[in-house]
Image (spheres, one colour):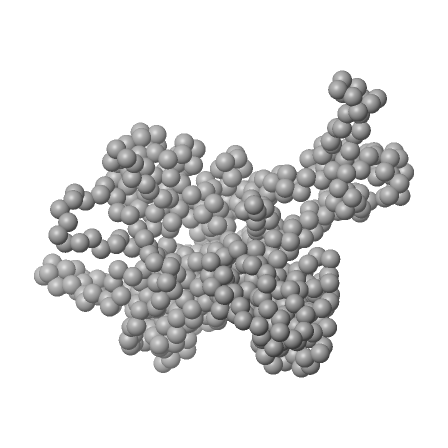
Length: 561
């Protein structure tokens, strides 16, 4: 784990969970798997504090535990999962665009709490939506629960592993820590619940205190609320499914920029048809026929069958190979194997010859990710060093290995400028120099010096810089908030006073008098702070998009045989 990743993980833990959790997580990130005893000694915290911090981290799937052969339990931080916290706003926004406000709030609640039962999540979201509605209107539980079912059906949320039931006759001593497991067929099965009710609005302070005292009395008297019908069935967000959706969106955007909107809609339809049946790590989507694609096109695209076949042929002939072709006319069969068990089953189901006019092969996701990663690298080179350096960089990507003289000739750039540009990119590790000696003594006069681009090494280096950039942005935001802490607290106090006065029906003159407690210069300072923080947040999201492309490319390349 690099220092940039460690620094970013520490900042994310501190911002979202506080100093104690950050200290425990940072200790695990630095030292690797450790038992509780060593963790307490390393952090200098009380054992109870460390236990609570570990509970929080395990609740959010940021730490995993494993029982050792000697019976001790070791805890290990999941750095890749901690870095996903940076992408939480993107997950929530995606849920909003796909499933509206209920979907947005359901994903937000699950990310906020780590995992929740369906009944609890639905009740929380219904209450929050009711708060935003006009007086007299409420959100019904059935509408939120239907959105929950749709999220599960499309695999955006999944069940958490549970402790398997052990036979009652077993007399073996209990394990130091439970082993959680869940069958794959049960991961997206929603329990049949009859959730009847409507969202509730927040009560006033007096009513809240009265409700709390009533709850305390019930607890003392031994009375407890009814157990929810889905007790023990917890749900969490399936981050890999969101990543699959992000990759699909990136491919659609790449096709749209390279060809046209109709081509991108054809690719979007193919990806949507196979989104649930394609595993997140699969290199190909499910094979689809042109007849199936034609029937699944959106109603707004009034293109004929022949036009669709022409678009599919153009996509299959494109050098980037976003879409492949595995058959021609009549009696085509699915011949391309899919590196995924689920898709292998689907492939067997359709192994009989079908009378189709065109058979569309699966999209090769790895080749598409390579294209996206190289386009990202080219863009970064162009922004950092100019269009001429980008021309040399693209030339090296295409020709693989070139001498300096060949670079000058092919790129049509003067020798002095080409040498300077190559050395600048070499110093930044964007290009590498390979020596090929003619003789065993490696004499410089009898050695070929070839420039080349190691895409994997360049992607890793740029990913490391992206982590540093995000960490710097987070520290800058924290600095801005610290510098204006007093002003922010004053603004919050004034807003609270205004809200309470409006609730009691205060006059406009009184409200205006309270508003003037914040002077003109202070108001201007608050606007500048808000503008700067918004810029930092937008920059974080933009850098995270680059991180996602580079991470997807590296992960896909590492999985290649």
